[in-house]
Image (cartoon, rainbow, N blue to C red):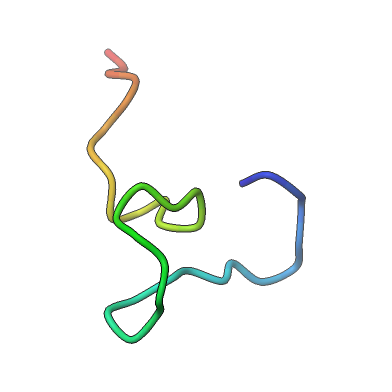
Length: 35
């Protein structure tokens, strides 16, 4: 997230933004693998 908020707002299929939008956090691949 760019700014801390109480609720996570995420873009979906009805949004006009592209797949690289910063609000599509849970729809992106895993960036950091933890052990």
